[in-house]
Amino acid sequence: MKVVYISLTGQTRKFVRKLSMDSLELTPTNPYVALGEPFIIVTPTYDKEATDLLNDFIETADNKKYFKGVAGGGNLNFGQLFAFTAKDLARDYQVPLLHTFEFQGNEEDVAQLEKAVKDIG
Ligand SMILES: Cc1cc2nc3c(=O)[nH]c(=O)nc-3n(C[C@H](O)[C@H](O)[C@H](O)COP(=O)(O)O)c2cc1C
Image (spheres, rainbow, N blue to C red):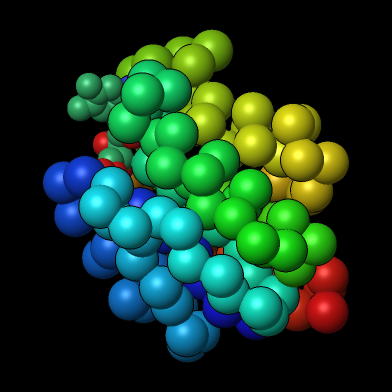
């Protein structure tokens, strides 16, 4: 299972690097990667304009059929809007919301996401 992620200020990148999983960072210049293997998305939370490249990626080639779940980083100070990017992707693509965490996450967040990934196979 590969981890596909975006990161604007580096928090999500730090979190992903703590996972013992292969990863691919998407950049706004080239989200159109045909992955051809199962993946989860780990995303920070921003307005749609900043995260639309995730939709571009999912809609590229047959990526959608390999999309297995999503996790989201955010800031709890945003209240109801905490981690909405990941929650929206889970809803829109009917994949499980595997975990949410703040900023670069902690050891517990790493363990919880790795377990959730194991559970989905
Ligand atoms: C302009 C801006 C808007 C944000 N909006 C939200 C939000 O609505 N909900 C949330 O949970 N976090 C929000 N955040 C927090 C980021 O998602 C959080 O800091 C995240 O860890 C950043 O990840 P990155 O460094 O990988 O880009 C926002 C941060 C910024 C700078």
